[in-house]
Length: 300
Image 1 (tube, rainbow, N blue to C red):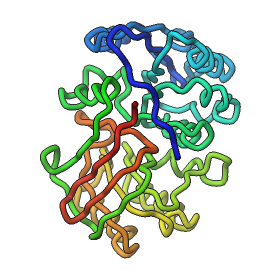
Image 2 (cartoon, rainbow, N blue to C red; image 1 turned 180 degrees about the vertical axis):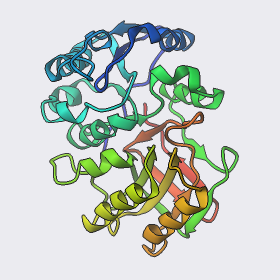
Image 3 (cartoon, rainbow, N blue to C red; image 1 turned 45 degrees about the horizontal axis):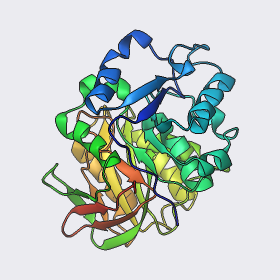
C-alpha cells in the first residue's frame, strides 16, 4: 500500500525548486508571497537561478538540488515552481530509497507527471498533482484553497458544485488514482517508469495539443494495452486544443465509452485558472452516476 506523507504545520520550512525548464527568478515574488500567506518558511534551491540551455541548470544541478531538499531534515515539502520539460532527464538518477527513508510532500504537475509516476512507484509515497507556484497570479481562490489539504488530512470530494461534469460511461470504480499530463504519461511507455494502470483510476489533462495529437497519444496508450486494465478515467482540462469541447468529447467517447468502466469528463484539473490539486496514489472512488470523485487524504 502506498504511504501518505506527514502534514505541514504553520511555520514549517519547504523547499522551492525547479526540475524542468528555466526559471526567471524575478518572477518568483508572487510565489514566495503565497507561501508567506500559507504561513510557511522556505529555502530557495540552486535551480531557481541556475541555467543550462533551456533547463533550470544541468541534469547534475537539478538532481543535486532535489536530493539536497530530500536530505534536509528542516524541509517538510518540495514545491516545483515551473514545468516545461526536463524532469524525465533526471528520473533514472534519483535516489528513491533516500526519498522513501525521508518521505515528504512533493508538489507540482505538467512536466512533473513523469516524476509523479516514478516516485509513486519507486519511493511508494503519495505525491500531489497541483498548480505550479510560478502560476500563483493565475490561480483562482478555490485552487489556492486546495493547498490547505497539506495542513490537515481531509478527504477531497469533487462534484458538479465545482464544474459541470459529463458522464461518458456509467459505473462506480474504486482504486488508486494516478496520472496527470497526457504527453508525459505517454513518454513513460517503454521505460522503467512506465505508468501502471492495472485496477487504477487514471487522470489525464493537457495543454496546446490538437485533436489529432491527443488522438495519437490515446492510440499509443491503447496499443500499449494501458486502457483495458483501468478501473476508471477522470478527464481533466484540455486547454488550447484549437477545437470545440464537442470535438474533444467525441474523441474521448471513441476511446473510453466501450471499456466497461466509469468515465467522467469536465474536471478542472490541469492547465486552467481553476486547477484542483489532488493527491496521487491514494484510494479514490469515481461514481459516474452521481458525477462525483472522492479521494482519501494524501497526508497524515
